[in-house]
Every structure is written in C-alpha cells, then in structure tokens.
Image (cartoon, rainbow, N blue to C red):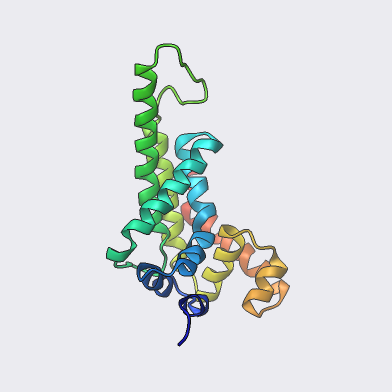
Length: 191
C-alpha cells in the first residue's frame, strides 16, 4: 500500500494537490501552502497594512481554505485566485473587527490600525492581483513554472533551474521576459 504523502509528493499540478488535500492529505495541503503563502501574505499586507495583521490574515486564509477544500472545484490551473478571494474576505473581516473593537474600547487607541479603510486602494490592489494572475495564465507551462518558483516561492535562478532541469540562463532570460511582459500588460494606459 502506497502511503498518502508519497502520492501528494509526486503530484505537480494544483488540481492534483487540491484533490489530495480535499481527501485529507496534509502533505498535499502543505505543498499548496508553501506554493502560495508568499503571494497571499503580500496581498493581505496590502489590504490590512501591518505585518502582524497580514500574518494573521494569511493563517486565517489557509485555515478557511483547508475547511473549504472538500467542496472546491478548481476553475483553471492555479489555486491562487481562489485563495486571493478568501484573503480579501478575511482582510475585510479583520478590518471591520478592529474598527468595532476601537469603537468599544475607549482607552485603547492603536495607531497601527488604519483609521480609514481605503476602499479604492483595496479595489485597485485586488484588480492588479487578478490582472497579474490572468496574465500569468497566458504564459507557457515552463514560463508559468519559472514565474511561480522565482516570484511566488522566492527561488534563486539556479535553484529554479535545478528544480526544472534547465540552465541558469534559461531561467534568468525567461524571467526577465516574463517580468517585462507582465509590466507592459498590467500598467495602466498612458503611463
């Protein structure tokens, strides 16, 4: 009998990992967590404004994701859009809770809590994340993998090259081209 962690370890697509995690595989869920914790954290940070709150929102996002995985039908190749949606809801809940607590706590004014929620900034940040995700989805599978490893997981060029079985130069050149393509496709008109 093959143990569950081995099956998850050999799965490379998000759909495979989601299916394994939904069936209870903790190693598959850990793989998804490692793959997406950084982009979820940075989205949370852009929404809530502090590192401590962003860490909490990130953990709350993955906890909610773990609970909802059994009913998830993955649309597309990446779990990130779904996680970004959960993260936005968790961030909004945290901000509302902090504002409510501030109103009910006369002595506790915490200057690290944003006094005003900049809804326009949240919408722009969320729209930018969605445009980046959509644009990354148009890349070749190798380019998507390079972007994921280097931009989302923080791999160095050589580590990504070793993981993908390509040369350092291939990773460096393709990532440069990917970044240029993303920058050109997501910059607002007229800038």
